[in-house]
Amino acid sequence: SVAYVGGGFWERGLHNVLEPAAFGAAMVFGPRIANSGEARELARLGIAERVEDFDRLAFVLRRLLTEPDEARSRGSAARLYCEKMAGASVRMADQLEKLVGPANRRSG
Image 1 (cartoon, rainbow, N blue to C red):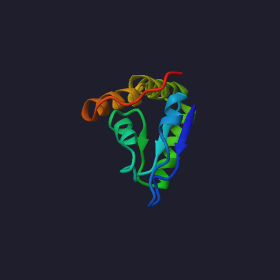
Image 2 (image 1 turned 135 degrees about the vertical axis):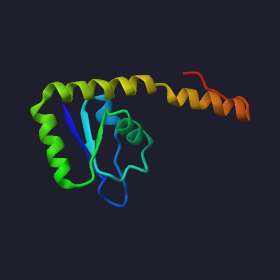
Image 3 (image 1 turned 120 degrees about the vertical axis):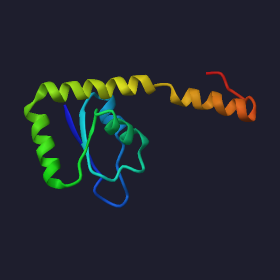
């Protein structure tokens, strides 16, 4: 029900946030999220929580684990975010096709 997404405290940056979001987990991650547009958007929307230090991480995790309604609400919002974003590959392919012309598509 609650996920800490690693990498946000280190130089390399955040790991994938879409997997826990798709499973409906409330998410918490560290401050370095420049490599993840989804993380920036989830934090901006208040669906996931970005924390600046380990003390705040412990506080937020404790709160989400002891307030299951809050965790469930954030997790549901995360899943809904993923559902709304579904089909991005098809939309991207359609846009590319408009720019460069039709691709040879195989059936099946």
